[in-house]
Image (cartoon, rainbow, N blue to C red; front, side, top):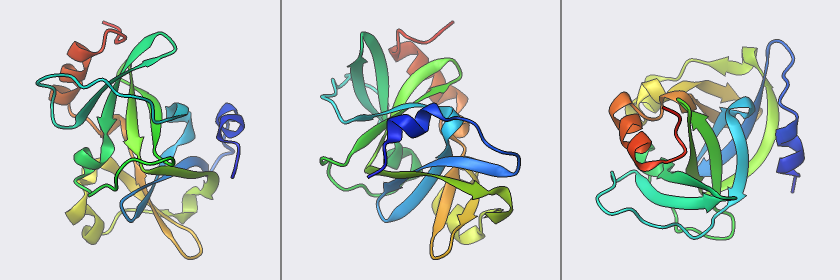
Length: 170
């Protein structure tokens, strides 16, 4: 297993190259640019929030900061296995709000040439809303759906997260 913490500290890319955090939800493999990721943590206890939107799993205390945790599979409309020892939370900052996205597992950090990224096919965009997808990365024997993490939540959803999260900057 790779040391994700060490790799997260190396947030530089060479021109024409993307450095991605690769994770799984259901049977699909996704990637997001590492520069969007603040950290990756094991699944802690999550405190549920009454009347929260369906995509909000709850909140966690991350070293004294209250972080909203979001079920990425709900946003993407993908079935998810039960949480286990491999389940992780990818902590990101979207619109000045730190939040966490639950993923089934994080498999690796890898470099991919931008020339190996194509626009998503209609088959993929028919299953996942196209505004979430930056492209599809082609590796030897696998395809990676590259997500635009900044567009995972619309303005209305971000407003709801801002109202839940005391960590958001006004």
